[in-house]
Image (cartoon, rainbow over all chains, first blue to last red; front, side, top):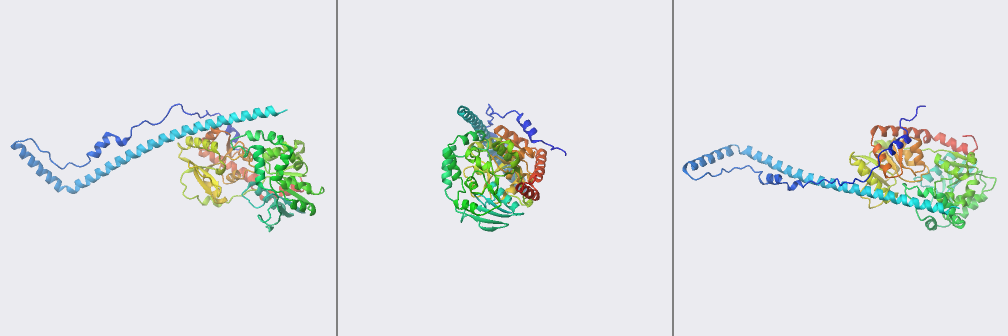
Length: 150
Length: 393
């Protein structure tokens, strides 16, 4: 009869030859400043509106003429393409909201990862401690038994 | 042939011990007239139950007394599934107890019923089967059986201090046959009665079945791949820490989770870290087994290893405690799983079982083993009856 493909005893031998897990010496927590306070994000939040006003030029006749022409052209452009600019503004609004959401989500993920790392280290420490206490207990019981034997 | 089965309990088939008693009673009733005698008057079955006739009797004594004596003698509950110190020193613990404490423990362990003992003396049975070596119904009931009556012992033995107490010597010396269900139990019994009496011990194996419909009904709301842990109600603090650490290291990188199963009515509180699921039925357990990457059973000293065999029958590999008794035997001989005795082995085992091919092959090998050794009702009935009738097995 053909034997099993995997023998449990051989797998156990292979498993016990693996290097033992130990508590990492280093703290692997991610030290990244919160993205929600990033100055670039703050800039985006302050300047996401499309500028519709024409800035005033210096004093002087020619400058006044140039300013009036610019205002007329701006009215013409924004007036005739009002639907287009409204859609663009809406698009930018969504984009900035998404950026804020991404920043918040990333910050929460980093915080969660750091908590998990702390938890894992703590769990490993507890496991090691439990193992050590167990060995001590077994040694004490073994010693007691040996002493009580005739 | 008139057969009596003396058992301290009869009815709860979710317990391994009781399931073994019921199946043996069923197997014997195929060829003989079987009467089950139990000391639970008013609290257990009575009259005809299937092919059996059940007679209840009044019990004396209380479990509280047994618990108090146990607490005084052994310091309360046994060690966890990860711990082997208890079983290593069980023999010394059991033998070192004063004789009167041993007698008191045996008397208080359940099944102390003078009415039942009188019945055994007055009614002529051809064969009396005693279930559970440690119970008063066996320890004291044996003295009431006429010397000409054949006696069979179904020891339901596990490595524990009680097993080694000299007060039970007669329980192992009087019976004509001792029926065991696994190789682990056989070795344990032989360790007590001596290898020279090998011919008195019969391995009747067992028979188990699962409902394959469990494959078609999914546990509600499950999406991720899970390792399923049995016996959540009996996990202690150190077991939780080990599982927690192993799972954190293994599952974080594999998008897997750990689900701890707890029986209905015995679910514990305050283990918020685990995914906890309360089992409402046996089918519910099978459903979880069918969906599990592997079935983890950290419970120690199993007599039959029922859940491991059921997981095998559903093609699921297992990870069991090295101190798991029959569980370890099934993992080793069935080549359907791994075992662990500490955190490092547990973590390495989980990592190894994350491999799809390995899991598939182990599951298949386990299934073949369970079907071959524990899947044939006709063979089981034949083995039980042959063991009882002195035929060669």
